[in-house]
Structures are given as structure tokens and as C-alpha cells.
Image (cartoon, rainbow, N blue to C red):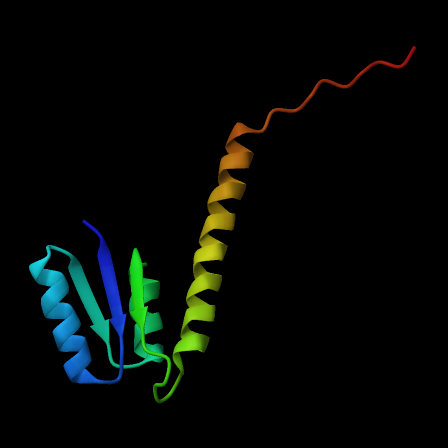
Length: 96
């Protein structure tokens, strides 16, 4: 099942979203602002992030930019590890 992170400074919005999503069987976590949301995302990356734009401490756009950077860094690390594991050197050609 998908893990969803809700980041919103409005407690009522978080509660409503959480209730609806959990009733549908999703695993849900929430955060009151972008800073806490990033901490939770760093601990456990979510499949889906619902993020408010206008929040105190750190707005939603900055939060999303940082989350994308974290995801991209993870993807790059996996790709590098995969490439390294499957790397085989080509034998050197002899010159005549």
C-alpha cells in the first residue's frame, strides 16, 4: 500500500485528509510545516506527498524542491551502485 505524507499548517485539513486516506487503506503520516515534513520524508520517503504552498517556517515550494533533490540524490546513488556492480572492463586492444 502507498505511504502518503500530508504537509499542511492547517490541522483540520491534515485531519480530514488523513481520515479519508486511511479509510481508503493508505498509510498516512502528517506534518504541520515544511521543516517537519522534510524530517519525516528523510526518515521515510513517501510514495505521495500532499503539500500546502503557503506555510510558516518553510513554504511548500521550497519543501518540494528539497524533497525532489533528496529523491534525485537517492536515484543517482542507486544508478551509480548498479552501474558499478554491472561494470566490466573491455580488454585492451593490441596495436599492430
